[in-house]
Image 1: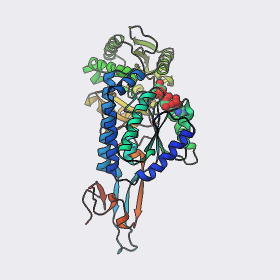
Image 2 (image 1 turned 90 degrees about the vertical axis):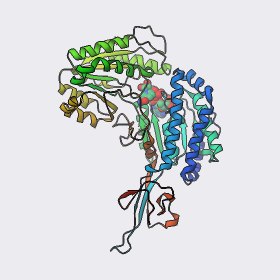
Image 3 (image 1 turned 60 degrees about the horizontal axis):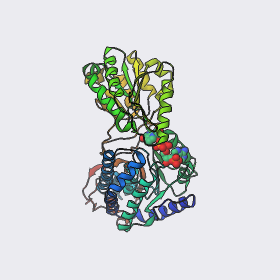
Image 4 (image 1 turned 120 degrees about the vertical axis):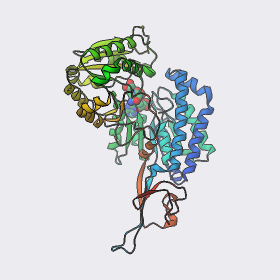
Length: 496
Ligand code: NAP
């Protein structure tokens, strides 16, 4: 398939039908073929060299060093998810051997995860490599055995074209069917909507705004055949400052939090947008250091004019709410398309009475909520359910003595951080990047780490199936030595 922009809607139909016929072949290939393909994609992306970085830089304004790092992360994701594909943990292979002598006879049952079918992936504006065309969702889908059709993000179309060409080149070198990867550009929401509604689409991966993710989720559920949509829609990632640690190291953490708020011009879904503490001298000292850091942070270009315009209007809206006052605004003049690092402040009561203040402002902005009591902090935590992350700045004693708050916070987020910042998402198996709605549309799954492969498969059980016709992963010999649960025991051994 040609990686150039394809016009819709025929293009969509063509891409999805090609993906379907590729799926019928790809799902049957041994896993090592998927691994070869994913390694080849990483290689092809690296071979694009400076051209890729320069193109992404001109389209996104992200600094070159950041883009080089993100490209490395993208290739690491492809290779490490490929390794995980081979290792086979995500297959959840279960075997309960039969017993013909039991009365009634016990059937032989063997179960493992199988691919869902073609996956539509929406590239993210803020990660032109790691969560776009060959990003985490695409890597997970390929590992699971699913072809992918990407809706390129309109803010970096040429970057997306280059990466798409790299994927197609890898597919060709690995002798994979043409439709294994499709790449579609769109102008307006119709393209994305049609991709989600196409009958050959079996799952969707999305990173972006709440409005976009929820609209696509609703469309998917309204189809004659509803399909899963794994939308990661961001959150305000609250930070709770507990009294013991605030008194001991509050100023230290104020500097770390300021750096986290402004990292990457605040354009991370894990950006801390709400900071919650108890009124008093320690919080005043924390606020003073935070203010000093922010006023000296220079504005910088945001990803695109639309995101910059949304940032300024959302900050203005927050600052115009009753009881909200600015704590700090960068003192450096800013130009069109640039951010202006800003911190607002409000009392706990003021925050609780204005739900709009709990909405994400995408960019270098945060609001300091000064609570009058622990009970008020708990009420804020209750209001802030549905987060990717929540952070405690706390000693062990703080955590012990705020049991109710700790429980509420854990109930409402996908990752709880202690004495750190939520930005900087490690790509490892034990990571979880997701969370209860509205952080994501399915709190059981995450978008970072090889466990994300599980989003794009479903269990299939084989009952009394002829031994030699079973997938190799479920045969007695266990030729690939994958981890399996055999008669309730975890093992990589063959069944004698
Ligand atoms: P977005 O507006 O949600 O767009 C993401 C993708 O979804 C684009 O390809 C967009 O393409 C498509 N789309 C959006 N709404 C749609 C709809 N109703 N129907 C069909 N397709 C739809 O995200 P964005 O452009 O990256 O940034 C906008 C805002 O999203 C930011 O200001 C920020 O608040 C938030 N954001 C959050 C994260 C995060 O990590 N959670 C990341 C980036 C952005 P079309 O416009 O061509 O339809």
